[in-house]
Image (cartoon, rainbow, N blue to C red; front, side):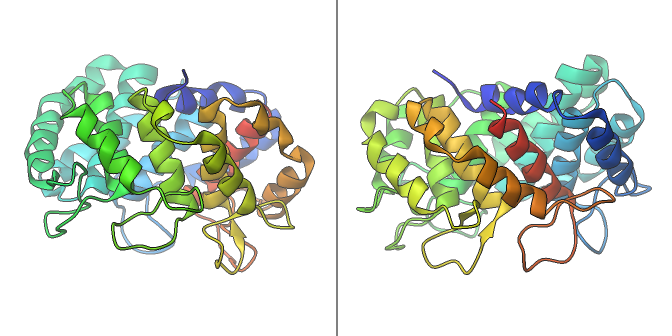
Length: 308
């Protein structure tokens, strides 16, 4: 059964089939996005761990044999460790650590390992909730589908023991809605694309996909596809976007079902190409006018999935 780690390395290996001209264009763009402190920022402001995590994913996709961006990224993470206070930032730091360890230099990654694991153990004890999920931050009183997805990924990357598997499975299953998709929070009446993809990733990692009606999930995801070929964040979202498109295709890939072949690949690919800038980078949706590292990852990862 496929899992989230398989999915990421699928992005890396399939991206090798992109043309060298395309890879070079996005490499040159990415180099310009790294800040002097080694981190990556969003569209404005200083570096932060969230965008640095996407910068690391792009480095893994576009090249892994150049140490310069990785060394400075590792130094940036080391400076941020004690300030991490959210599941999102913790997952970003763990992603960078794991990519450095697996693709670049294990001894470089070891400089982060003990402090990162200690920070993760401290925060997860604070984020775990009685409903079986993990909250996004210490202030939240209930588990988040997305934060639980991030927590399990982080534990896998740092080789930390998982909490009660059955309770997490029950938590995720409780978030499925009658339309087949999954909701982010307990009081949400409607499902959305991205928590649905997070739920599928969690259940795949815990080998618990048999606990839900998979065909319902698949039909929900296909209903999120718009006429332009992209997928929307939910039934009422104004436009399709790259994040939701990548999330929907990732969930379908994890399900490893023949329904993946129902996709009109050319139509999805035209949508992705419409958001690619000639000088490198991807925009998030047709209403967007600027590239960033997060959406550029989603653009390249979606291309990789389409060529599965």
